[in-house]
Image 1: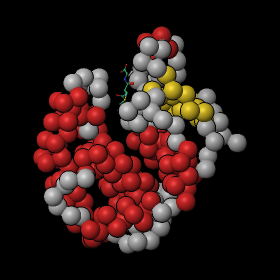
Image 2: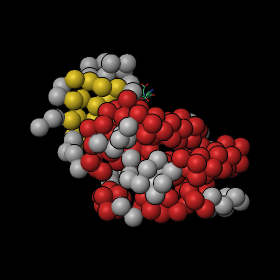
Image 3: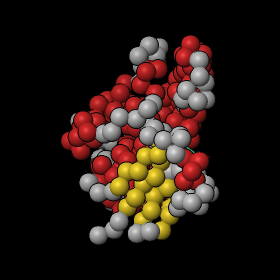
Image 4: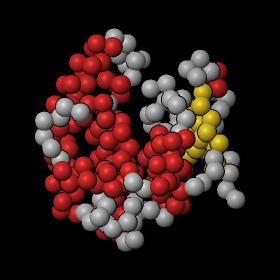
Length: 209
Ligand SMILES: N[C@@H](CCC(=O)N[C@@H](CS)C(=O)NCC(=O)O)C(=O)O
């Protein structure tokens, strides 16, 4: 059996989709979470190729870059698409959710990026109107063009997990969004019904933010 060790902070950030994939795939792994105080001490001595996390050790070999790790796990689990067209559509959707939204949301979510809570709320609103809202309109249109029951096919793939994780990440901003995204909302509800994801939501470890 493959031995997996995931190293990251106790954050709902770059490793969260990796943890979600492990849970969805029912794969056991060691979830090592360093505090910010511990990090400078382990940074140089630990298995971190570019002195950053997340890093996934696979049978002792260090893999970094969160998206490479996610794609690897999607392949291991078998949710990376049945043919080349599905594969590239899955990568496109997952990368869009991650690069366009999750990677850009730290600024209004992370206290270390913006310590003032009021300013974070303001930044969140600006982000929602300027970035999230147009993105969701485009994503809704895309889903209607390429999707089936799920984002790229009639089965759950890595694209759905990346989309689900992205929505969870920006949920606090969505309550008063003016534009409805009916197809995407239905898709989110359908993905959320998955038993493995329900279990994940019930049992996932509490992160600092
Ligand atoms: N492109 C990398 C970015 C990794 C990264 O920026 N990691 C941050 C935490 S999210 C980190 O390790 N920061 C601590 C440091 O740079 O010392 C990825 O996607 O994995």
